[in-house]
Image (cartoon, rainbow, N blue to C red; front, side, top):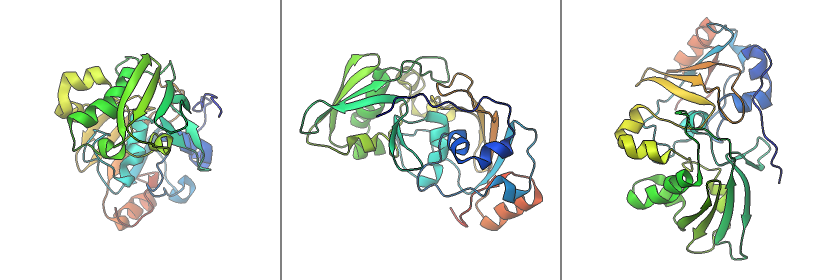
Length: 273
């Protein structure tokens, strides 16, 4: 298992170059989630951005909630990963790789005690540091307090997370769960800031979400557009493209028209949401 630190590109390259490079495109939006659909390549769009640091995307669906533990819709996972990142992640080659969690190992031969180690340089968008208390809150405490959250159903064998230190913990399962590391790279296993969520509540969080991903959500006009802004303190390095605008366009033909007219740089390739 490698623990090398992935870095977003820091050189002065145009968005066209970033999007033509699969590895850079993977980092650009926090890695497009599996099943989220493909994006039409920049070179096919024949479009220009507002400037070299802004990208507009025609997207088929809006985000119903900014609580990433609440539900799972494949087409919004790239947005969630952009704002929240994820504990682990699958590479384009379908290899499980470290992200916020840099190391993981089973402490027993029954697959009931999984030790996980966080990076020590992860900051939320409000400047606070992510700790194992946030992981415990997001994956264990919230699921017990609200049975409607998808994360509880996904990690339904998780009894608790023992906090050993700010960066180390042990996930304790009620029965053998050998697929647990896979769940940490799967839908809904996102870490939210405990202190902020408890302070503002679910409604306040939905209005102004805070994550630890490469982009911050700075504007959401429901049914119309979502604006993301690069987070310069992201542990993987500040993204090259500083602003990404998602224009919500449900009709496939309308998305194609926006691309052909040059009003957006990319469009979701599926015909419907």
